[in-house]
Amino acid sequence: MNLRDRYTSDEIEQINKQFYEQNEKDFHEFKNSVRKGQCWLCKDGLSTFDETKPCPHWLLMPAGFRKKHVKHVLNGFSYDVIEGFLRWYVNAGDAPFRSINDIEGEHDPSFIRAFTIKDDKLEWSFSFAKGCLQGQDGHGPHYHFQMRVDDRPFFNYSNYHIKLSSNDLQMLKVQTGEHPDIVFDDRYAMGMEGIMTKVDPKFLMQSLKTTDDEANAMFHMQTMVVAEPGTEISGDDIADLIEESRRTGVPMAQLVKRISNVRASVFIEPGDAVPKAAQRKKVRTKKQSDDQ
Image (cartoon, rainbow, N blue to C red; front, side, top):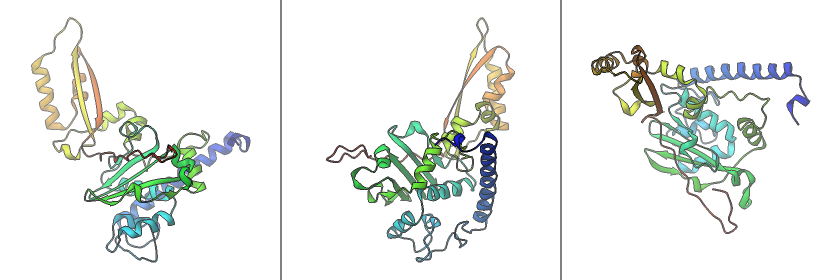
């Protein structure tokens, strides 16, 4: 049933407004808890591990956490909660957005969702294809999870088929636009795909600064400068702008606007600080399942 069959436009707008306000409040509380070293969900310390109290913060590898404990988290909490916790956790730190590689062009296009989150020595990846949601092979609707520690395998995609709850399936419909009347506010869980596609390029360009530390760069930016027909570009002018860019941190794309007879094309792509997308091998069962 369409929401507009149940609610008026004003009621839908009010529901969306309340959701946005609650989401903003929750994230700021979450961020403050992280700064205090406390888990927003269970209220224990992020570095604590109590085998009788499973919590998504276990995935941050507190002392005592082992591979056998991963399933306790995956079984005890919905996909939506686990994904949201890890996204909020890295975005509450000093490197928001760039720690989440959910760039569609870097993942298998047959996957409905696929992304990798990295924080220092820890890396978490999620994926599911159409066959996963259809519950093929008798597993029911499910997703796959992978975890790496110091770039070494800790928990593999193939280790487990994790159940998707009915609420997870409804949330996925909202996230993929099947319920257009519901606003999915992901600003605090946003990764690189959102930054690349939802943020105005002009605003993005104005907010960027150059850096000599390419390993921690969120973006790579290239500027191509072409003189207007019948004119020439002064090499001295370009050299002066390059020097000013190095000195001030203002990108060439901004400075080159001062030259009246040139046109500049700017190309922005993810930088070295964005984690590489963890790929999942395609698997074919005897029934030729589409579950990958």
